[in-house]
Length: 148
Image 1: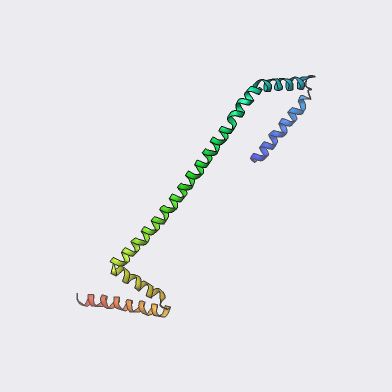
Image 2: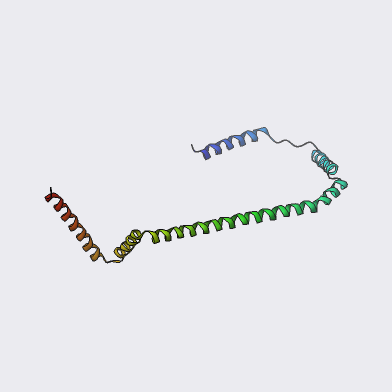
């Protein structure tokens, strides 16, 4: 039995129990007495003098809320701008470090050029280069065995 089926069965059992209780009517005049009590309490709390006191502070509270909102928006905006500037500085530092590596390490620059030339060459040229490399390795291996 799934959770939904269990809950549905429980609701059906409770509905049958409620039907067995029968209907009961509220005593006559109960609704009128409740309404009168609520109006009396509301009138006691919200007196005209209290409403005037609140009205005096209403403008000041609205202005304070607007200042808090503006301050928050400005502060959050500056945080976003600061993060953007930091990201730009990080990218610029990375670009400068690449320039330093390319300028100071000639072998790395030569390796980069060699990789570029291999990437730009056709498949047949690449296969020929690999074959030449294999032949070179074999000749080194043969030379090292003959010298032993």
